[in-house]
Amino acid sequence: MRNLVVVLAVLAVLVAAAVAYVSWRDRRRLSSDDDPEVVRAARGERHRREAERQHAQSDGWNRGGHGFTG
Image (tube, rainbow, N blue to C red):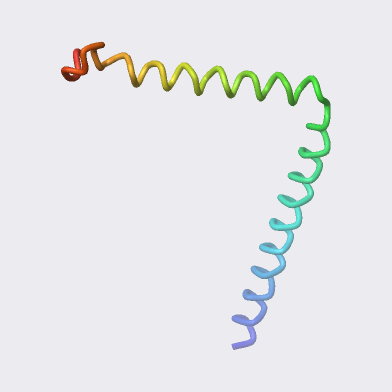
């Protein structure tokens, strides 16, 4: 019984350490993204990819609305 308690305590410490590390890493990553040029470039790239994806999805339908032309 005592061994089980020790194992559970060690697991709890490891999980807490992992959660703390991920939280610290994400906080540090977010603070480095405050550069306006980086944010603007990433936003532009995201919009460009979204526009390309929407265009590719609509290319299959012909102009007359008669179905997918493949």
